[in-house]
Image (tube, rainbow, N blue to C red; front, side, top):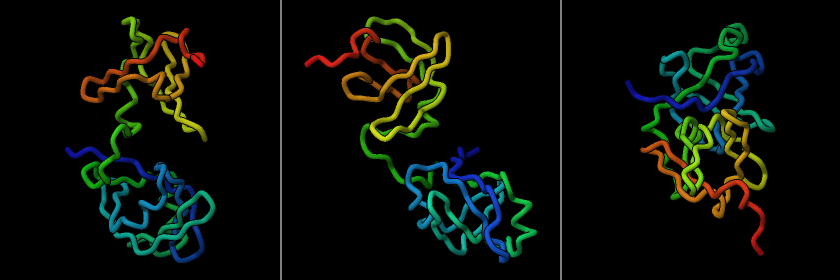
Length: 165
């Protein structure tokens, strides 16, 4: 079975002609403009139009033709097959691939698994919840190696994160 990426969640109706308001789950909302089809409940649907409204995407999707139709899709996810995603730039990763990676420091100490990735204006932050909560700024001098195939990330030991100027 092919792997699917959740790229948005339908959060509300928009207007009376069946448009839906989508909360994007991707860092690049322009991706919606490039899509011809999406999957909702595993069913392929054509995208008929895309508009942007603040931090939301307004979609007109084939087969959703009234406000009542759109109402039944609230809280549903919009997905696309992984193989239809654009290739990533070097040293960038999908969050879904980072979650669950084991994090070690350069001294071999296991710090836990990545629970989530938090986006901040300056840099992403890896969040480890257990065994002890830890927030790791994703900076080149802290995160030293990421191996997605091995699900392993190596970072500088926590006590050495201060500026070394």
